[in-house]
Length: 316
Image 1: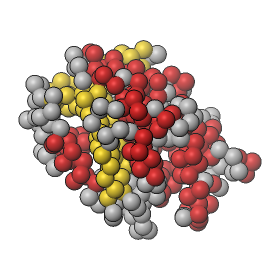
Image 2 (image 1 turned 90 degrees about the vertical axis):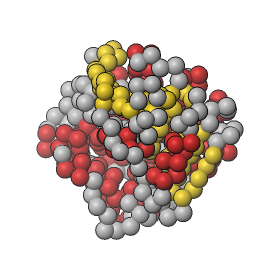
Image 3 (image 1 turned 60 degrees about the horizontal axis):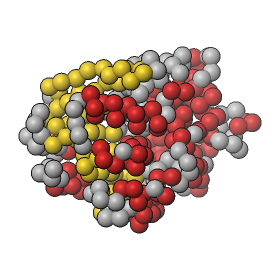
Image 4 (image 1 turned 135 degrees about the vertical axis):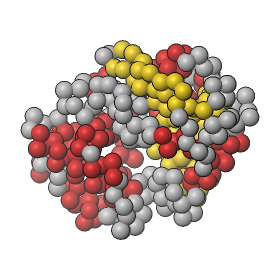
């Protein structure tokens, strides 16, 4: 991994709807432009992403998507209107930021939810993309959301039962993401706090590939926990605000854009067929399935991503 560089420029971009999106630029001001699309939704763009990029070769843009990180207003505030926080809004934000920074095209690096956003963005604006490097693939379809929130109970039955039982009995056979979204909007702060804890506990469990995993320390922060849970449930309950199967069906629009897809064979949160099916539909995409890796950058996934980013460093 490369040394972590410090930002040389940053700001809050007014993207409308009362939202200010935080961005910062690191690396070489004359380097190859790249933008990072973080996961979640709601995780925020942490500085660790910079270590995939040679700071002498790349001009890297970190952006906190609407409602999270240092962007305002925070989705962790129950008064924040999420009706103006959809995939379509995020795509417009990215294009507005690209124009604001005077970038013609940029490499897009995304993981997990960031892959869904990257694919939707690239299919909408292919001329803005030089390359795509995506790992731990998701399309956030109804099938994928149902898998994570219900079908994975076959793999983690005890843990899932606790997750299911976090919602009222009348909601347990329905859309669990929507049920949690309602709890996270409850006027009682105690109800909201319990719902955020229950949701994030399940998040920790389903991304692990074994018992005895380390819990994500970010979930200890009540503000982060609420922001994350509120945005994930909002997007999942609406299947990313996309037509179901849209990203795979429109993958042909990415023809001519170099793409590297990296996915763990042991990723139980996002089974490997998500990445494999996308690769079949995307002319020229390169897929690497990493044998002992799960969801995230560990187990060798980060090495493949690092090599792909390095390979594209001199491509203009």
